[in-house]
Image (tube, rainbow, N blue to C red):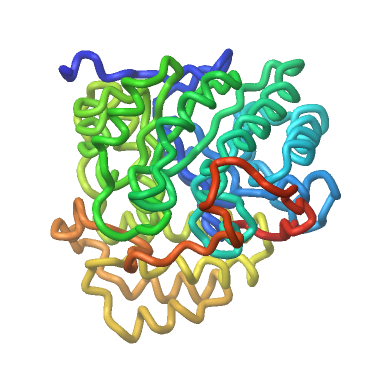
Length: 380
């Protein structure tokens, strides 16, 4: 595959995305403020944090509060989690009819124990019939509104229980507009290297668009993934933590342009201030600054910012404090090149996947799943 065949847009049903790049939902990170910040940097599809279908159907306060969109989000994209076709279908209809949502993604890739132990997330594709029923319910509910439904999954639960090729076929048969594959098993969580060969296999096996996810740390990684796998677009998660300008670089790369220069610490500080400001607009100044604290280590990764400043930034609760501390940083310090292409965010080690008793004994559901077991406040 040559560079000339790199896609410049992504089509999901009737929806066209200007750059074939999707921001992966990350619990506690990809709220409206972060999505707006990323969208200010470059084009793409920015997906809301994962929300449970039960939370939408029951009007759970926390779940509904997550349905907040930034002014520059011209495409409202929501990721749903669910284990019951009826709940998922009703949730999709509510999103389309009452909240002006333009795209719905279904999460079958989350490896978090509180999700998988109920048969959800990355555990659910093992139950192939149930997967098909959920996808069909979602697509049917969205069809009258012309809203595309996609799904995200992993290779499988572990190397002995791979599901990605079956999931691709089921998604295609159900009428999904695309499938995204994270090239890791649930057991891997975020450890090791993503298996891009599996992404290429899925692309070759289905006719619907395939999006690749895993180990995209720089714009060049995205282009290389397209070259090596033939995917129609990429999904970016941890690579943009503390680096929302990655979407600027991705937009340039997919448009065949040179990636701009790396930001100095002064420019990074400006983005940090903007991020805190957007969080303040969403949550109020104090709460926004407190929420911003989790992002500081990601932004300053590799920079020579002193331990004292880092520590105090981790306790910031006002714009005035933030401005004073950012003012202590050397604005001329060059970006730490050694950090390029390296993992960001959580990595960890392989972990045992919690699934319901007897889950792996059969590909079929032997007893009804309890949709009430979904935590309506869970973000995955």
